[in-house]
Image 1 (spheres, rainbow, N blue to C red):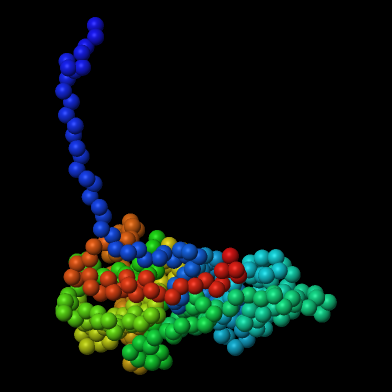
Image 2 (image 1 turned 60 degrees about the vertical axis):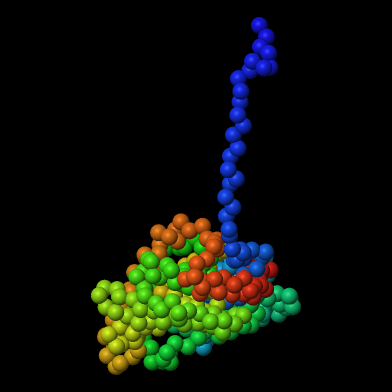
Length: 346
């Protein structure tokens, strides 16, 4: 039996509402995107990791580097792979002021130049046989390397000269699955400091346009925090894309903190936490104060861990209280990026 078209049941067309659009901010380039990285100072390792006469190898950017000390004890960071056949110099040795390849005994000085091959006078070093030399500084118990041929800026000074400070070097102990600059965004996120960490601030005292240049976001904001029942007054600043400094007073005594953010690979952050105290002549008390500064900062960062371990970072629609972090986003978008060591460390 055939059913006529007029006899078919009436069907209404249901129109679904349009899907909402996500109003996202302009993206910030990830580390390694387009083959380049931010040109900042990055910690490579602890000073104690680089033993005289030994080579220390580790990952950095998207490749591998080594650090060693010459006869004068000065540390240098170089690309890790021998230009001859690619042997990792991290398994090599140190002779005088050179790092020596374990395979053919080629030697490289602190400038990265090959000074001698294993066969001596029979085979002169090829002119093209050299390593990439990273600008290197040893400070605050860490060895730092700058991503570039020459540093665009220098590590900042704290309130007191280094020789008047006691430093306690520690680590967060957990690898973060974000770029170091994302960590710094968290630092500039005033809402998060208030909501998660109980910090108070004057909303009228935020960042001005003069607070940063093309390569430094060396701005300071005064904040107040009462943790463990002790009121604290502190200010802090972000430097480059890889660390921040905190300057504070508790019960009338100064202490400082530096969170130094190593980048063992794109999208990864290893956090060194440095606690500082001013020397008073009481070595035990000064060391305890520096250790206390480290512990305080570590406890604060531990509160952030559940967020960082699941963070899918992307700038969204801001509010009035986001003024400082929005300025930091713009700073990051314009930040110099390069990768001059790419052909050497990969």
